[in-house]
Structure formats: structure tokens, C-alpha cells
Length: 113
Length: 115
Image (cartoon, rainbow over all chains, first blue to last red; front, top):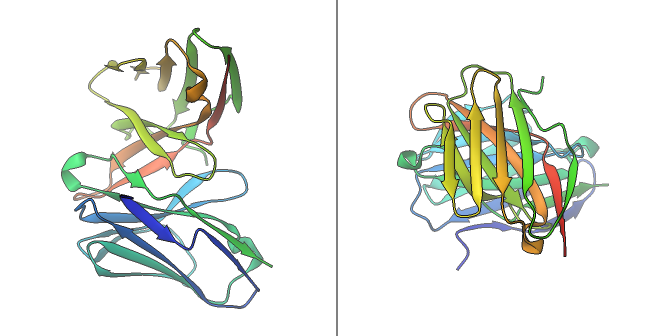
């Protein structure tokens, strides 16, 4: 039973398209995150939500819009995709009391052609 | 501006020997440090952590050492096993307010344990 699940695992699309990546966690956590791992392999935080409220927004273009319908879900919608958006996107979650231990999904590899 | 640095992109050790992975950081506000392990096509999985008030934390074959004055931490794996072969990420956090702790990751070190 996967704790943090992301769909799709792979996403290939054309420049200019709009796409969404879904994330769900069944750990009962109240905080969720999106990270981007670029071609240089750095994992960088993009967003964090706590109880459906946006807490962290790290200088991400406004083409990226996270949406949290409830505590267990944090989806990422990307408008007008660009070549530079190609990366692996990881969703993660944590419990506030867990102090920084974040649990990650398997990642979504996005390729923009 | 890399606040967490893993200067060795790869490390190769023999099965049964010790693996030592190193990590340096620059931000004095970091107060919690973690190591994650990542297999190909999977997400990072938490391995071990240490608070800035400690200098050592041990969990089975894994030990993390923290030298605050040098802004350096290391992960020791002993004895190393072939199943330990993976990319190891060092991560650090500073309380960004409330219950949301932002993790800053290093670039990772690929550990290969040879049978």
C-alpha cells in the first residue's frame, strides 16, 4: 500500500501544453510538498502546503499552480509548458510533529518536447 | 548558491568494508540534518537524521556524525552491503516557521558496493 503516490509516473508532452500531476498520501500527514529535480540532479523545493494552506512558494513561475483540495492531496498544474520544465517532480508529505522527516513519492518524469 | 554540498559524486567500496559519505553546509541556521537514500526510478527514502544539538546518531549499520564548528556531517555505513548501492542525499533544514520545515538537499553521492 503506497504511502505517497503520484500519477502519472511519466509524462511526455509538447511545448505550450497544460498538464497536471496528482499526488495523494495516506499517511495522515498535514503537510505536503512539491520538489523538482533538474538535469543537474538537485532536488529543490517548489511549494509546501499545510492543512490546505500554501506555506512555502520558492520563486516558482506562476505557470505552476499547486492545488490542495484536502489534506491528503496536493496536485500540481503547469500551464504553457516550456522545454526547461523537463525534470522529475517529487511529491512529499510530513507530519508536523515528525520534524522534517518527509516521505517522498516515486516521482513523475516530465519531458517537454 | 549551494548551501548543502556533497563534493564526491561517487564512491565505490567493497562489501563488508565501511562506506563514508560526506556533506558540508554553509547556512548556520540549519538545525536538523537528514540522509536520504534513493534507488533509480524511486523517490528518496529517509535513512537517518541528527539534530544540531547532538554530534552522533546511530541506527543499526548507519551512523551520522555532525561537526557543527566545521559545518560538516558524515554518514558511516558498516558493514557495507551490495543492497546499499544507491544515491545518498544529504539534506538540511531550518525552521521556516510553523510546522513547515523546508529541506535543502545536496547533489547526492552515488555509492556502489561491490560484492
